[in-house]
Length: 113
Image 1 (cartoon, rainbow, N blue to C red):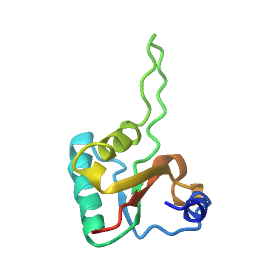
Image 2 (image 1 turned 180 degrees about the vertical axis):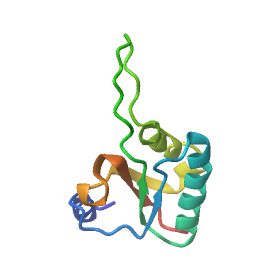
Image 3 (image 1 turned 120 degrees about the horizontal axis):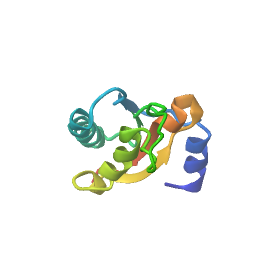
Image 4 (image 1 turned 90 degrees about the vertical axis):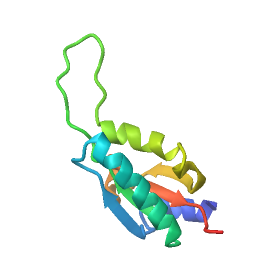
């Protein structure tokens, strides 16, 4: 991604061409939906898509090990770095507040061959 486009994206001035809302889904539901959405968007020639994960619930954790907040928010970037998505994903960046902030990601896809 060129520097000018990256700057526009970080400022929320580029509008995502497609979006999916995984908020409220379980990990088992969200993973196949994400794969289908990303591969479908790439096949349709889209370059910038928005994946909404939600921020996760605030937990009052009193145990010695802090619990993760937002399982989808944590898992989505990991899933995007694994096959079959790694071959079509160019960049993953947290979204601008206008498009969901901490609870969403911009996914910049490679050009179709």
